Length: 189
Image 1 (cartoon, rainbow, N blue to C red):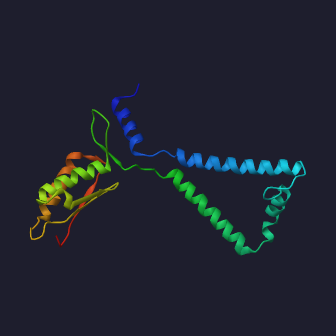
Image 2: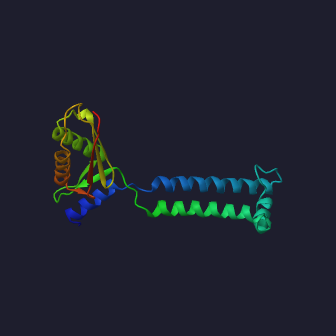
Image 3: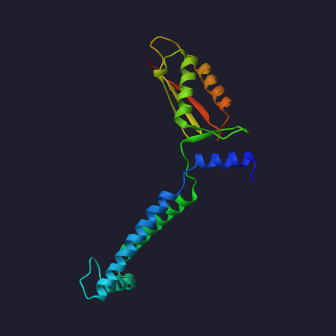
């Protein structure tokens, strides 16, 4: 039986990382379509019927005669195949992240969406800057929170107080992975 802490960390990982099932399904469907097409071409060839696109003999001869083709075309095809392979390899190995963060807790698995975190930070920044919440926009990414505040015309705004309020709030959330804040105040209201 697993401990609650390991169970919570496993649940948190499942909720903050996206699975690769969509990519695997798309690749499997494409391979099934290609295999069905080649199978259909072989059956049509055995029945002495005209090919749908390319006869299997022509496909085989074309694959064998690839070295006789102009080098630039073969090179371009090789580069395209290598790039597609590299993209698939990176997509398979890189961690897929959802727009969520884990709030550290030993008693439960708590997951917060980035939009919820952004909304809370906007509320605290607006309160610290003495502006309307409509004048604050916040975007939260994997490691960063960008706070953009537009002050009311003629009303001075204390950037240090806003930064302190936002940073204090982020410290209270104790997000994993940690998020750093960057506060920008518009010059014109």
